[in-house]
Image 1 (cartoon, helix red, strand yellow):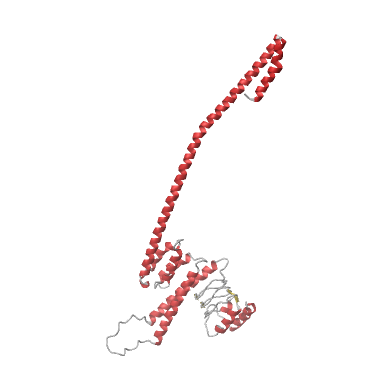
Image 2: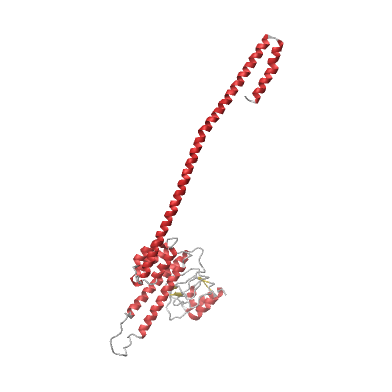
Length: 359
């Protein structure tokens, strides 16, 4: 029973029932008794209602306690299962990485144990393709691919493997393409030197002492060496085209790219921003540099610009401009890549470049 109900009963007893009993008036006593009886019944109903509510609360507690326990048990099982699945995933990942490492090691050993002239470039491209996109072995696969590309004698195979390497090229590993260009240029120069020797000495010297000839090593002919030079030049052009295309795709431009010893042979470099490029020993021959920006280039030692209309560039640094005027000035007897040019055009462009040259 609530405090308010008790207080109401006490008040009825004090103010109504007690005075009626003291008065001895039967009518008043009957009325007071009815009021008291009704109040008592109301109090009883209130008590029963409160008891019912307590019973309901008790039933709710008895219902939810086991439900909560079951729910917590399910959570525990799920948590345990999640931990076990994670452990299985980590273990499987570790096993997969071990398998990947073992397979890559086998491929590497296999390729390095085979003479370069006997390597199947198509099999190599197939074997390395997966690893070129591997987060763990991507760079090692690229290094191996570049080395093979520099020595393979198969032109069509070169294209296949080179395409795979180019697809995975970005700002961070662009230097791999430059390195391949460098390797091809070294091979070209070595082959060219060998060809020059044969041209100077077309017949081998006659042995001084009589007797059986020494074990002869196969000597490439002039025709074979010239064919090798032509093939290397085609590959250089392919690499230069890819390098120029990659540079065009970079936004913002990679103006300070290191192109040391890279070779651009009959390539289109028009409009490229190479304003801070390193051009030491770089070949830009028979190429188009119209509107290209070389405005702040300071590294260009031994760079070659033969048969290139360098004066059509958008900007040249003052140092580079002086270098090109001294070594590759316009010569009406020289054939240049691109549209025909003239001394008048050369002179007009020199003035434009000089007026805007960066010290």
